[in-house]
Image 1 (cartoon, rainbow, N blue to C red):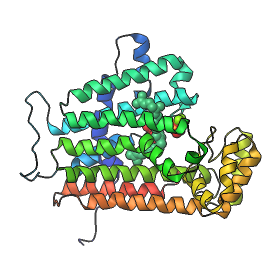
Image 2 (cartoon, rainbow, N blue to C red):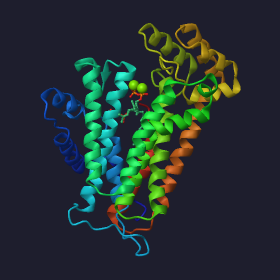
Image 3 (cartoon, rainbow, N blue to C red):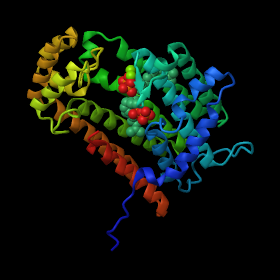
Image 4 (cartoon, rainbow, N blue to C red):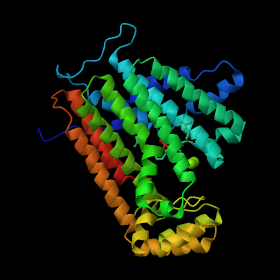
Length: 365
Ligand code: FPP
Ligand code: FPP
Ligand code: MG
Ligand code: MG
């Protein structure tokens, strides 16, 4: 009977607290000037809040690390003005989501995107200038919230995340042929652009609780490996996700989907600006000719066809999945190395975090 471990749904575990965080976010993004106010609140309205993965992970992390701290470890300074630990950790979730949305607003300007979260992008609806300003505004509100935590290490970590976002975006924008064809460059760019935020905010959750550098590193490692696995599967799904035989990687289907996609001006697996992801980069190791093809760009549908042909003959999709699995395992191993706890809630949250590492690699959309 003891073998029956309660099934946990990571999202329902934190649902109530997440709506508290969501409501607080709405009040944090209110601006004085009406035009700025409506721009800044745009993606915090009911129905367009997004998946809120990051706050979900962070709240689970807070509970997973809710264990007594050994006395040899540096204790958090108890500031009479600062609120209790859980509120401070919720604040990290809010700050993280504000930084995330700010980066999406700027990203949509840079990408000239028309849509986001199923509605018109802010730049499309209100224009790029106000979208840039709304992003800056969210970022500044995030900074104020961060400062009020009065933890300079956490301030430094999240400020560095913003630097990483900008660095990753720039790396993607301007690359030489050698860089474009390098899996190492690609992984570095991915870390900066999409992983640094979740890994460093996970670490911040641990630091606020007063955990040691070792435990904080484990929290960081969890976020990093979860994020990398997530992005790698995203890359795979770009190729297999639109096909009828979802995830099976049947190449005729991929090709079919692509021809269809091309006719509707959407290019499966290949980003419009010639951004190449892990499956193609692995395929390149078997077929170096692909690098020349990538340099020519994918404006010509014939090049897409040839590239997909090489991809199908290669182990690109498989190797990308294997790398994602490796990161997923590393993520769950980090949780297993957390300090022992027999607390039921702590254990439940840890199981939920491990469950997320599984879901990330088995998802089909
Ligand atoms: C937009 O974010 C998509 C990306 C930034 C690319 C892939 C995302 C990750 C690597 C995030 C990994 C993080 C975790 C916690 C697994 P989004 O899909 O989160 O957008 P949304 O806020 O609109 O849902
Ligand atoms: C989504 O990528 C974009 C990001 C994950 C980060 C973008 C970062 C910046 C624009 C730097 C500025 C940052 C701040 C905080 C002001 P994508 O275009 O590949 O994915 P999409 O499909 O979600 O658009
Ligand atoms: Mg974009
Ligand atoms: Mg972009």
